[in-house]
Image 1 (cartoon, helix red, strand yellow):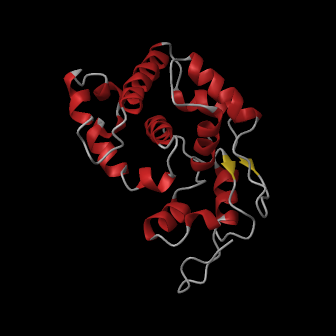
Image 2 (cartoon, rainbow, N blue to C red):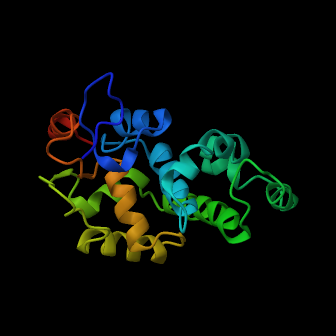
Image 3 (tube, helix red, strand yellow):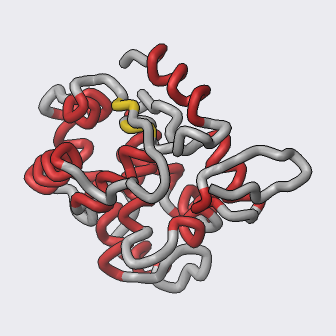
Amino acid sequence: MTKPNDHDNKTRCSWCGSDPQYVAYHDEVWGRPVADSRELFEKLCLDGQQAGLSWITILKKQANYQRAFADFVPERIVELPESYKLELMENAGIVRNRLKIESIFRNARAYLAMQEKGQDFAEFLWQFSDGTPRIFARQGHDIPTSDAVSDSMAKALKKAGFNFVGTTICYAFMQAVGMVNDHRVDCHCYEPVCQEMRDFSL
């Protein structure tokens, strides 16, 4: 654990360090349960962009991604012309990786295909934890990078046509959107996040 902001004297999970944007993300976003399908779609896509990189790299580019990818509205993404992908490869505000750029378009198509079959994206994702956040009591360095639930989610997402959704990405996604509480027990966010999780419903 660490106290990245001495002036507020709050104990936090050590991974967020002292960068103000990272600290705010840790305090206000990470682990808070999300029920909105579009927001979940955005986060899943961004976690895929993180592959091989640190999350703070993507966090600092999130606003650029939102501008580049139509606020992550799947219906708008699939309407973007093929030529736009070439423009994105010149966009210094995002990760200029052809496969990662293409993955967002592919994921938008998979999302819409799921929707056309009458499957709500939020319900699809939350089914892997039975619609209920999992609350853990993490201490020290016992936080995993994957588990049986993320394995199942990754397999199902790939089958549905999504990519950059391996089990490690899925577990990081579940941590971020409140499907699991992996704040350490002495983190000042642990109890507030637990309460949000207890009150959560789809």
